[in-house]
Image 1 (spheres, rainbow, N blue to C red):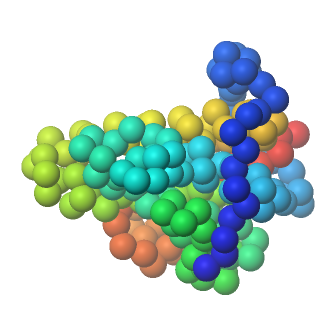
Image 2 (image 1 turned 45 degrees about the vertical axis):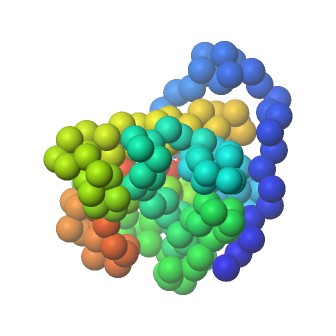
Image 3 (image 1 turned 30 degrees about the vertical axis):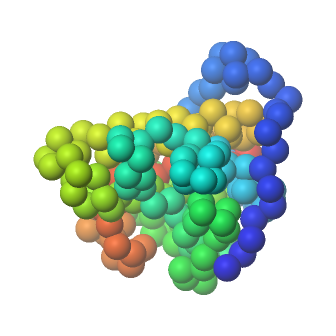
Length: 191
């Protein structure tokens, strides 16, 4: 496990400024990696713990079921985020960003981003309580968490682009993890 640095709770921009500035970015400096502090901040904002006693996170979740798993693909491999101890677990040493781009209908900017955040769902966590309606709730959870990531990226002067166009089966072959892939969000320094 890689223990991540503690997140900052005070940024240099107001929420209103971040909302005003937020734009989708598809042009990244490939050779400018993100720091571990930036990755830590992005992950915490996306799905980090804000209330340890109950395990509540930065993003709301129906019934606090938290069906999402967040992965980060970067040059040195693929990592799974563990919110409960704000750490990363290495899943693979392979740089899969190019494969992710190909599986995403050749959206090459995905390969150029220094980090790609991959959102997976373990639907059963929510469906076990809410039945089929839980599918809708999982998608709400995804929207909340992904927006947190997009806003935090902007607050760090980074660019990001939510990507939903990909071949699910190919993403599963690349990632080799349990669950269903829902979203890819490449993040990096914009041109």
